[in-house]
Length: 337
Image (tube, rainbow, N blue to C red):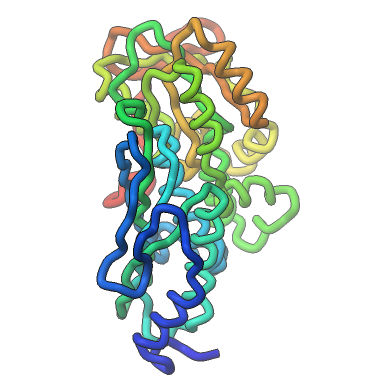
């Protein structure tokens, strides 16, 4: 198969931008110096970006290029979910080695485009550059939200309920199993946790429906770990949070991984994990409305604590004991905590 060096930049770019269909809101797409976009009347633009670096954010031995592209798109879609915004347009930039196969580049782009298309977004431009070390891909995603209706991290108040989607910790467990067991992690026993790591789903549709209830007062994407990201939300809102361990939804697969890895279940749930779930501050009076929305989407929504006046995070154990929780999660300059 041809490499980037074989074909050269101009031909590779031609293949990356070939056969583009017209898309809503795109006055001018790939092929010019910049894209021209037409936002919907009465909306505000929401912008986010994420970069995946080979060896740090994805492992080529475990993640095919198409799957990596889909995960990159999911990281951005999850950020828009945390803002209750609808995705529209994306810019994809790639740094690739000259000896890399062109088909791998096309597959990565296809993975990102297919995942974005499921939520109504399209790639409208980007950039391609040569690297000599680790390859990387960066996606910038633009979305829309009705004016003044976006969620933020700063709206939580004492008395609000602490809710979380899905079962955080599954992606982190999948990665830990892959590193610990290597080929043994490909056993059917661990497939669901590997999928949580390699093929995460953004909670975008759920978020947009939850926004219509008016119940959510603050929100944040959980991609660095529940404890760390919850601490960020609390700091932005000027509140603290108490997590009740007995209220966490049961997850037998995560419990089995906890036993196999020799890692406490609480550490998996609260620590570093690339889950792309959402942590929410919810009006107690509208809890039932949120539960109804989650049930319609088939997504677990656990009410696992509450926001309090005292700063910091704490955990209430099943026996009633309350202890402080030190937030620790993924750090790009340190790795996992």
